[in-house]
Image (cartoon, rainbow over all chains, first blue to last red):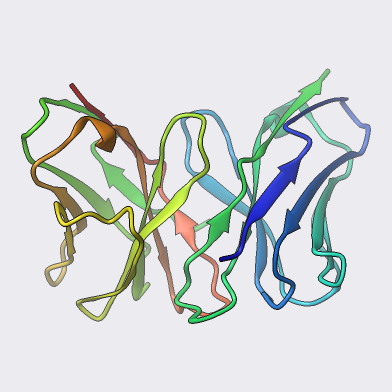
Length: 113
Length: 114
């Protein structure tokens, strides 16, 4: 069973400084990785989806996937206080892909003005 | 972006009673999901549903749980009877396909069983 771990558990950055979040998974044969964020008491907002090794950019959000290293990261360019939220890494399991996602525990990002 | 609506946003219920959580998925989506998140723990898959049937369910989807989507109405999660350990936030999601398609989530229904 695919396992997903995120680091750091929490991160504080200053407005405008790059924020980098990490996610490791246990099996590199998955090909479906997503970053979501969750503002307090709100639903999940999809940020970036990435399906092959390399880089994928969506606005200020860039995901880097390296399946050989079992690692996917999220970089937030010029973060703003409104980006303060919990960021969740989600991976599809390897077999029988029925749309199920396996989530990490999340990284709580605080962006200070 | 696409919106998934969930009703109620929160509910307190006595242990042993029945509860129904309602989800209005994104229009034209065909795949529907429920996830459970206990405070401080990761979000976990419960069940997915397509064409009137459960496709896959996890071990968290106990016998007391059921899902359905009668034509033109909400996708529902029913728990009967409820137990204390069912207290959690339940998130509904929908997608247009399954493999490779983005899941869009609602804001969750917070259930407290007392």
